[in-house]
Image: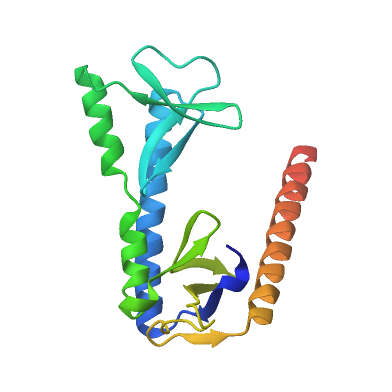
Amino acid sequence: MSIEDYAYFIAKGRSLEAARAAFGILEAFYAKANALRDRIGASGYCTKHHRLYAFSFDGPAPEGYRKVWSDGGKAYYAPLRKTDWGRKLVREMRAASKGEFFNLIGQTVPHEARAVIRPEGNGFLMLQVGAQRLCDEIIIFVPLNATGEPGGAPADAEPIALSRYYEMQHDHQLAAQARIRDEAEGTAAAGAA
């Protein structure tokens, strides 16, 4: 999967409304997930099927958790459901979902354009519609079908060339670096005063 597997559109009108609502759902998910992580003393978390799945800890996992996944030496643990607190924590984890983000973004494009399945090695690759914020715009990306065309365009959206998408990514990264530099200089100046 690469950047070239998608067509890119600047969200406008109906697609912009849907994308803003979708990003609101995503922000609410991360707020819930971060609060839950902090409350139980975890150092991180991972998701599965758009839901909070497991937590990582800086040291050994507390009692009442089981290892469910490992990523490059970092282990992730889910609460055991045989205790009241474990069942309650699992319910809270399931309530933190970001799946509606993809549903809202997907509703802006024709059904056949929402996902494309391609053969890949011994399996398949599924490309889905998605979105990201770049340079004060929301970009919706739609997977290309077997003929190299998007199955449809998001409602009211403006298509952009891949070269424009690359420009926007570059400009976004430069702006982020400038913000970080300005914050560091502001912190240093405040400390000197």
